[in-house]
Image (cartoon, rainbow, N blue to C red; front, side):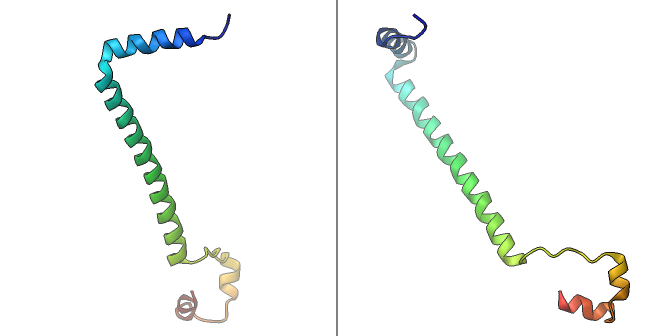
Length: 83
């Protein structure tokens, strides 16, 4: 007897409809759907921004350690132009 039968769900549904009315339940479901759509759009927008920023910036390069930078035969001016 751990699960709820169909009759239990019908009684719960009838109580909800009596308390809130058919129009109010419909409004709540519509707002819920809009919220989910907005959430998905936000995720897609963040993902799109991340992809475009990686495309514009290019791959991330690791900075040279100070010991390697000292060994670099070219002056710093030319090193900036290479990157």
